[in-house]
Every structure is written in structure tokens, then in C-alpha cells.
Length: 105
Image (cartoon, one colour):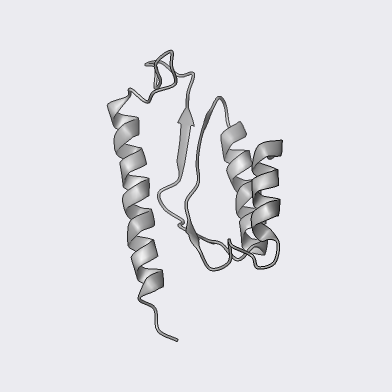
């Protein structure tokens, strides 16, 4: 399920001309259980229709309620392992973006 705010952003961006088309993207989520994973799957389905190009690896689901705490009381990421995983996702997105920019048709 997608939040109303995210749905509005996706809707407005998809109007002609579709600003999402042919753009690289990555998804990460934080929550409990596997709700974030289901949300990521739903967002991927929508992104395919919008012609977004998602990286496949790494996938990043953060269990925000698992000990040790991943976030402080103000919502700042404090877990070093998770921070490294976020960094890995961003590096992968960057590399994928460069590959898309350099492709030849």
C-alpha cells in the first residue's frame, strides 16, 4: 500500500510529460515485519508502468524496531551496519545511473 502523499507525488509526476520516464531509481524502507517489503514490491509495480529503471541489488529493508535501535528518538540513523547498507544502495544507484547515461542506441 502507498501513502497518500507518495501517491500524489507519483500521480503529478506521471502527467504529460512523464518526469519519471527513463530515470534510475532505488527503493529502501524502514518499518517492522515485512510491510516495507510489500510496499517496495507495490512501488516497483507502479514504477514499471511509469518506465522507471530500478536497481535490483542491493535490496534494503530496515527493521526499525529490532534491537539494537537503528534510529534515535529524533529519527536519525545511528546504526553503523545499516548506514553501510544505505551507502551500498546509493553507490549501486550511482553506478547504475552512470551506466544508463553512457548507453548507446
